[in-house]
Amino acid sequence: MNTILFVGEHPRTFDVRRHTHEHWELVYCTSGQGAFKFENGSVIHYQAGDVVAIPPRQVHANSSEEGFTNIYVTMADPSFSYKTCFRISDDDEGNMKMAFMQARYFYMGDFKNAELVLSALGDLIVGYMIVFHSNEGLSEPVEKLCASIRRNYCRSDYALDEVIRGMPFHYDYLRKLFKKEVGISPLEYLTKLRMKNAETLLTTMWANAYSISEIAHMCGFEDALYFSRVFKKYYGCSPTSYSKKRNTIYQQDPSRIELEE
Image (cartoon, rainbow, N blue to C red):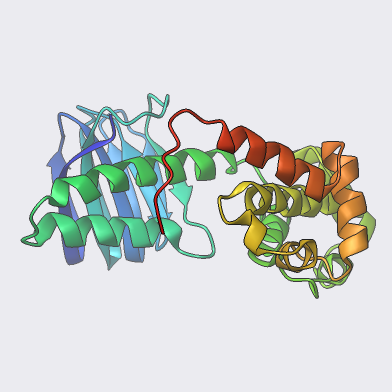
């Protein structure tokens, strides 16, 4: 599953003649723009930051008036359920670009056991594609607001209301649109990310190294008491109780091995 078979790179190119592959081809455009044209007459336009996924044995050509550069990966048995060609866009952080560049680096380099890294990168690339493809239905303002929240949810000075009011849309309209497309309000989305981060921090093996105030701050809360109230409402118990309960389960794990200092 998600096995990377080949990684190649196009320098500035204007036309790639009609061809096909026995496996999925995933093409990340690093610069320029152009269009994939398929034998059935369909066309997928792309630009820098886009990935075009092409199923096995789909005859296609790639052309651009201004020229393009890309990194392309041939992959066996990717674990997504899609059957047809599709295009997705990278996130604001360029996570997919980094994954494709790392795949190129380890595939083309002379590294012993490089297949171990390539295996992990294959899973990572497919994971990114599934996540970003699932968000393709979001409108541009909602996706921008989601990206802003994902980047800043750990900051205690992140003012969500100010961010929403600073966008070129009516405040109430954008909040309603967000809830319609995401299923929860922007504030609920922010709280969900913060609580998920809090749960992770409270259940790691080094959780006892942090005070509740420190964990609150790392999750974007200035007030530890308010953090505790929100956490209890979310999980049904205080952060301290939750941490003790999970640590007890961890201590009873039969696969756990204590190491001497």
